Amino acid sequence: MKKNIILCGVGGQGILTISKIIVIAAMKEGLQFKQAEVHGMSQRGGSVYAHLHLSDKKIFSPIIPIGEADLVLSMEPLEALRHAHFLAKKGSLVSASGKLPNIQYDELAVLAEIKRLKGALVDSRALAENAGSLLSENMVLLGASAGALGLKESNLEEAIKEAFSSKKEIAETNLKAFGLGLKG
Image (tube, rainbow, N blue to C red; front, side, top):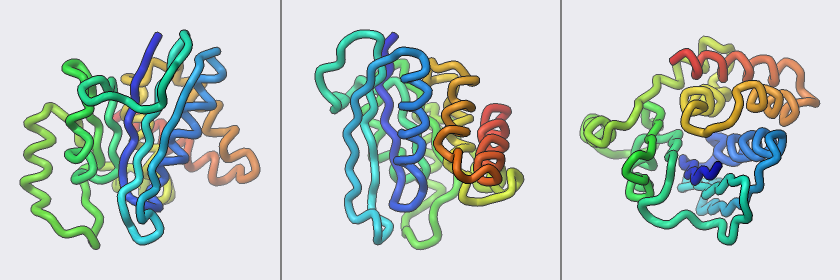
């Protein structure tokens, strides 16, 4: 088993939390991992992304080459396009469908390009609100992309519980959001 994953968005959207949960779930399955992350100007809403390799064999580099990502999961549509060139021919692109209000670009054109690339657009904001917190939008997208990760859903759920073990109510909200993402 080998998965190359790129997680992207802007500062404060929970990209690194998604990465942490995927790593915990991968360890539960006995997989090795390597991760590289870039925070950019994340405190000012700048680009944040992580390259994440999962494998049952030794991994030599944390950086995913162009054209070799099995999954690009994006919290922000424009960031999805910025990282789409990393996708393998049979890779999956999963992105939030709503842009952040403080980022200016032609939203319709960006969404049309994601659709042209056969990317899945998820109304993660509405689903997160349904789960009880807009802060759980990242867990909605994790759920929506779970099939492309190659990890057991039960291990992802356990990883969410573990990541939020000191905050039971937050863990429950995030599990609900993950479940809503799974259902689409």
